[in-house]
Image 1 (spheres, one colour):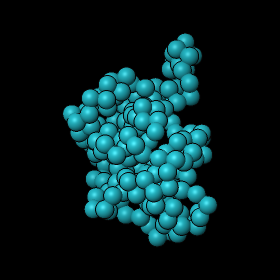
Image 2: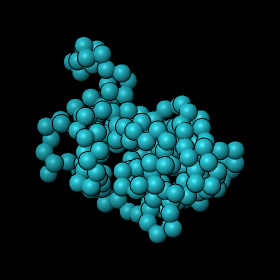
Image 3: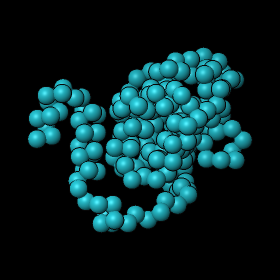
Image 4: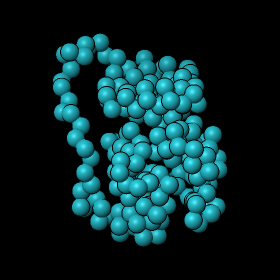
Length: 192
């Protein structure tokens, strides 16, 4: 039946996947009957992951989780995302940077496009795991602190991160247009 609905609505692959994720989440099993999840522990970068990222020397590479936390980067990733990473005190978060840090408007010349992509990727992640408390908390925080986030979240757009070219303005290097691609495998997303 969901396939017929997806065809009738002419949903693309991402929207169709989101529909199926939502249906799985709304399967009628009360929350109290679902298996308990282990509480998420602070993400630690495994040495093998870091070694793999460091082996990528010709481009920016990073791993993020569904909440847009940057979990690990290669050397070029640390240099490139220096405005996002900051002083290194907290786990850098792409969504918080996008919507709460005024520096993001300079870093992303196509800020509106990046804002839409960020929210629609988060919306797809929320459909995959609607019980992710940390993601719910992040959405709540951004909704109360950013009118733009709240408006975009309310649009219910979903998107996966694919290939293309993105423009950036790095404070040291200047204007950059970088090819991007990603791996869609949950729970962490690798991009380069």
